[in-house]
Length: 125
Image 1 (cartoon, rainbow, N blue to C red):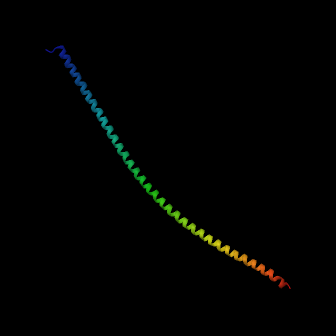
Image 2: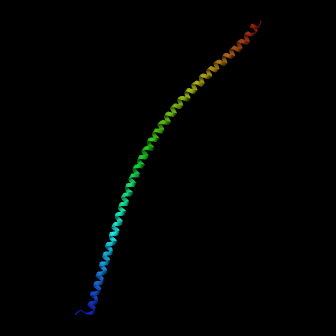
Image 3: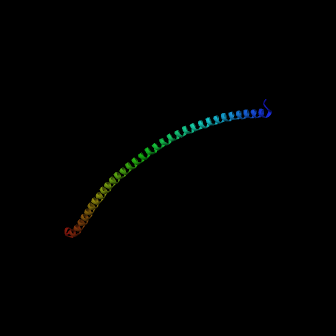
């Protein structure tokens, strides 16, 4: 016959086994949830990595475009400078020429006035 103590021990062992089973089941559920969370996190991280890669590509493209624009601007600035220098030189040449003609004209007028004043008394007699 089984004594009362042995019976209590057997019941306690069964209770312990049931608690162990419930704990194992709960651990499995928790592990499954953790696995699901890890998978979702991995998927999100992969998505973020892809977005970052895409952004890196866009940044590289923009840097290339900026470099191209800078090169084109430098070339355009040089072209405009050359054109402006040519225009300034042309204007300087026209002004110099105009001043020469003005000087020649002034000298001619002064010479004519001097000649007129010199010969006027002779002509008026």
